Structures are given as C-alpha cells and as structure tokens.
Image: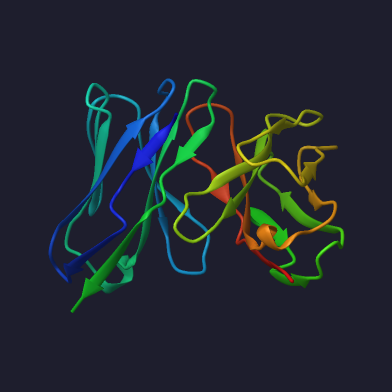
Length: 109
Length: 112
C-alpha cells in the first residue's frame, strides 16, 4: 500500500528553527510537495522537490532523499503566524497526490 | 473571481437528501479534484478530472459523482447523503505538469 508518515504534532519556540520530517512509501515517485494549512482554511502550496537535495525559499527550506523515501521541511526564525498544519504529499506513478495526515505545529512565545 | 470558488461555505443536510457542492475556477487549469478532509486523516481524493469531458475515481468515490462539462466547473453530487459523509470538502485545480494544487476555501458539510 501507499503510505506517508509525518509526526502528528510538534511544538517550537518563536524565533527558533524546527524540522518537520516526512517518510513515504508509494508506487512510483513524481515529486513531493509541502503545503501549509491554517486552522479552518485551505491548504496553500509551500514547496516542491523532485530531485535530491535542498530547495530554499526564504525562511522555509525543503529537502528530499529519494533513495531513503524521506523529506523534511525546515522553518527558520519561527513566527507566531507559522502556527499551522504542514502537509506532505507525494505524486505517485499515476500522477495522483498521496497525502500525509499533516503535522500540527504549535509556536510558543 | 480569483482562483477557486466553492459554494456553499457550510451546510447541514438531512440524511437521504441529495446535495451538490459547487466548484468554479478562473485560472483555466486543466485538472480539477475533489477531496475530503477528516480529523486525523490526510486529504482523500474522491474524484478527479484531468481535462474537460473526462473524470476518474479517486480513493473514496462511493456515494459521490462528478461531471466536467467545461474547464471552469466541477460540481460534486451526493446522491443520498449519509452521516459518514460529514466532512470538509475541498476542491482543487492544477496546471498539467509539475505544479502545485490551488485549493478552494472548502465546504463544511454535516449530515444528520
């Protein structure tokens, strides 16, 4: 079966750095996405990785290792507005997105 | 309109009733999707359409139907609602290729 695993909840301090991990087992791989979802709102696109390595975009970076079936989202200089759920999704061989259940990130002052 | 519009925003529906959730996009995206999101579970694909005139079944299609008469609209119909269809429903669209999805603001449906 296809499976995306990510921690259910994480807590971090304002101004700090946090890494949210995602491991996957899917039938084929055509890219990995990270989305941010604030409570009661729609998911919004953060990043896309298809090749191994680190993609940096401002305070957010995403890393991919295809051989390990592993990705992480790194958030730097945390702000209170970063409190949200972070969703990992993998596009499989049929070009359909398989979604993890999301990681709820709580930022404390 | 800018992006994807879903209607209604929320609805309480009696079991056994028929209901259509509306989704319209103005980005001329080829592909559109319907997901449901339940607490503790990831987004689950109900139906999708890769282009106007075609549709396909996702992970949880039972009890739902869709149509794609044109590029912009992708309505989702519950023929006879059941309480297990209580969920938040998101419509999404994407351009063909390596692009992310754009989501609508969601419809919160409660079946009683």
